[in-house]
Amino acid sequence: MSETWHFTFLRHAESVGNAQGIRQGQGDLPLTDAGREATRALARRWREAGLRFDAVLTSPLRRAAETAEILAHGLGLPPPQTDPLLMERAIGAFTLRPAHEVRSQEPAFLPLYAPVGGTGESIWDLYVRAGQAVAALLRRPPGRYLVVAHGMFLNMLLHAVLGIAPQSNFAGHAFVLPNLGAAVLEYHAAARRPRWVLLHLAGPTCLPPS
Image 1 (cartoon, rainbow, N blue to C red):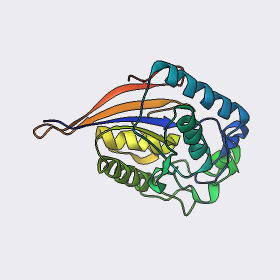
Image 2: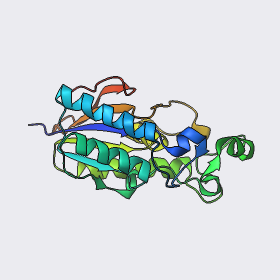
Image 3: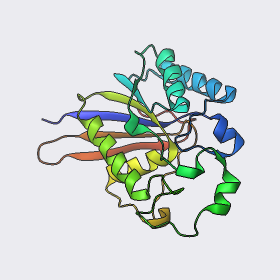
Image 4: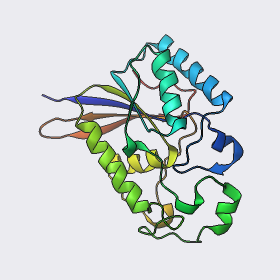
């Protein structure tokens, strides 16, 4: 008999950092008014479509937590549960710096194990943490989970789930999620052949499968 976990991995709505072209990392900026309204609209669309979740999980950073709170309220769900494993990549000295400044100071090539911004996480560090987050999710009971996190983190989470090794300089595969973009996956824990199934990967205008 197979147990099934259903995950909707959602990138947060537009934040002040997104709107102003700031590299956020683990810097804690809120949503914009446009981001809040887009999240409320998404909650209405999901409610009308009959989407349901057993729990909402979120990064503790404000842009993700606020997105999760709006969705949980709009869907009539309990308050979100926070997990620091879901935080965005730590980017050291580049945190809350304008993107154009960061681009001028970034090395031309970033090795797999090199910390970003001097003291931030390497690509490998982020990949390992994403794998730890997946393991923590699968320690929860089988069910339907909405997980609100961040673009770079979710990119590495999808690498971990789909068995794609990360590469230096973020070469190779990339999964780009816009604000409120979602990746929907199921994990089937069949005894003989446990497997992940990617159901949906798209922007906020598309409804994930129920």
